[in-house]
Image (cartoon, rainbow, N blue to C red):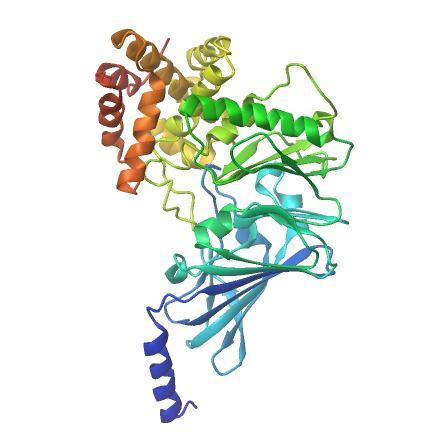
Length: 464
Ligand SMILES: [Zn+2]
């Protein structure tokens, strides 16, 4: 039985530690286990009566539920008395502790092999090979929600003394051990971590910010050519927007022999200062091409402007426990697909967007854009009829606005000014814009009334 004095001490410790924003320590350990990594989270103290471990079930921009809790094993905590207690899987994304006590550490393992085996589309999964470990932050790092905004001291350990690379600080770090400060959980989970002898890193010069290619490939690839394509993409976007908001940027590529016959690749995912593309080896970049296909690269790097630095409600702060309802997926995706058509001068894409919406299935056509976006919040790529319809409607809305703005201003302004208006608005207000704020921001920043175009694209059964 706990003594009276122990209770007093616990209360005292609880009082002095709660509310103090000390650094949390995260350690990612890759040992000799060929299937799993270990995560340790150390903090001053939390009370298991109210706090719990939450493992992400989605991530910004995936627009789907990805139940990473399935790959979490052996959750334990250490109490302030030094006892080890077991964590239990709760509902949804939660792990909890039956004993009501004060804890200072949580540890668990993440089965990367099972993750890759279960997640058949490679973009959501971390990967583990004989000489490579590729980690997506949100696939392994959990959070204690009450501590989510606190700064983090991250240590990455490789038991095999592998070199370590992270998009948080994109240089290839010495072998074995890396420590780095991270702003908060959102940045920790957004980043990528690549370890191993088979990680290739190429620094691209001739651009205003450090631009880095980090790759793992199961066939021969030409890193300089990937770098050249990334440079064209980033320069095109920088010329369009007039500035680069990222302090540095990493293009991460994986070219993989498919994990099984059921695995398919092709979707990429954006992060604050990086993008991840997982492709099968048939898509490997093997050498110089005069006109390479870089639309996807331009699109994903373009996300570093929108929505990563200007976004609607639900996108950020992100609700890691679920895939939140987002009503502006058409903007996140479509506006940047439209920017891609301008940057790469591919106006023929407009016809492709038109075909998508004119030939859409009835159950998609009849939904207004806002409702379709709510649906797409969990099913964007699982039913890609939804995903491509959302970005096509958004791109066509942008296209129509662009023509109108240029006509009304005699070419002085364009849709670019509308996007810069959104970016400036977010920088000033430091919050997500509400749905009804979007059109006024677009109209105000261009000096052109865009309401009639906006209103028409809000309706069901769009055609073009
Ligand atoms: Zn996208």
